[in-house]
Amino acid sequence: MRSEGRTLVFLSCIPIRAITIFKDARSWLPEATRPSVPTAYLTEANTVTTVTSTGIKSGLEYLKKLQATATLPAITKLIIFGHSAGAPLMTFYQNIAENGPGACQGPEKIIPCVATNLGNLPKADGVMLFDAHLGDSLATFTYVDPAIHGNECLPRNPQSDLFSAANGYDFTTNGATYNKQFAKTFTTHQAIRNQDILNDALALLREKVKATGDPTQLGDDIPFNVVGSTDARLWQPDTSLLKYTKKPHTLLARDGARPVQIIQSVRNPMGRAANGLDCNGSTTTQNVHIWLGAHALRATPGLYTQSEDDITGIDYDSSNATSVSNAKGITVPLVIISNTGHYFVRPDEILYDNAVTHDKTIAFEEGAVHGGTPCLPCATLIDPTITTQAQANAYWGDTIKRTFDFYSEWLAARY
Image 1: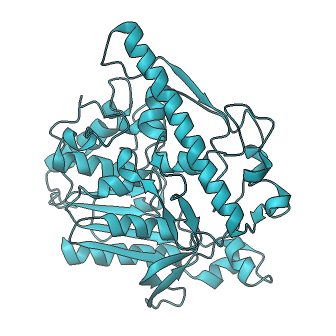
Image 2: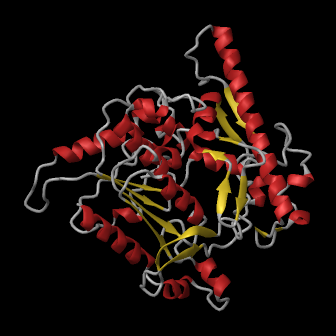
Image 3: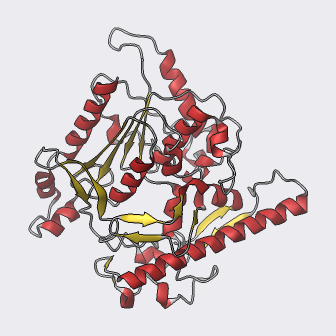
């Protein structure tokens, strides 16, 4: 399940052993009424908690009540599965199910969740994550463009412009090679601009509370638009960043072996200059509550950096919308499979390292894109004679089978 859309045709619908797969994904709602990603962690009556959190709850309760049939056994264990942005959603759900609404209302949070509808959530017996996103707040934080001053598209600051050829961006490939000094300048100013945006949102909320005399105001009716907040992620054009894990892990290798080694991302460049330089296209349109609850994240300028094997200086606990923070409250078995044809290799290791459960597993699928299938541009980078998807499939092998074989084995060993 993902927090922003249906996944009824996603790969996890493939049967694993004799397991009943129930897809919630808010498909009961008309398209126009489905909440978007950012509302998943706010839990207001008009946001996704009444749909997603209660939807997951309803789904688990429905499965618990299923009786055995001539073709299906009764349900004995409930496992929740999250792909991409479904990872912060599912870890949020399980954290609250295990620890109660207080887990998302601590003083460390930029803004607390609202407890409505979050009580007595049924606990899952395990959590499965696939190419897990670290969260909507980290996504936005790393997309905020430090070349923009204030909230004006122009002029851009050339010293922190990742879309500048002078700084290493290649418009032909949407790739880049940034030197260490530029990367340091960029991340420092990215942290500063995020901090400024956060302070602006908090100031508007304080003004609203003062004007209304209502301390429970959360800013739902305060418009908040942020220019340049959807595309300026340093590691997407520069594939030398977040390229490696820090420790050895299991690789689901293309030859069928499972060596334990330092994992390397084989992804192709994914810079987004066209949209990033488009003022309208790169603008996030939200309200103060959604920004503070789902997009905002604290980090320390100067300590926040991106390198070949790390992201540092991030205060994950300041947001409810991070997998890393929520994983600290989960005690049931956890498995993560990350895809090396994408850019979550080191991020998913960070998630794994912060998980507190004593039963945690991580593996990496060689050559799979974010959705799990073989990566053609990755294969072409390695061997330029590979130019078709069929050739890429032959090169990487059956990534889907390797992934779900691993999940199947993990499930069989525990349930």
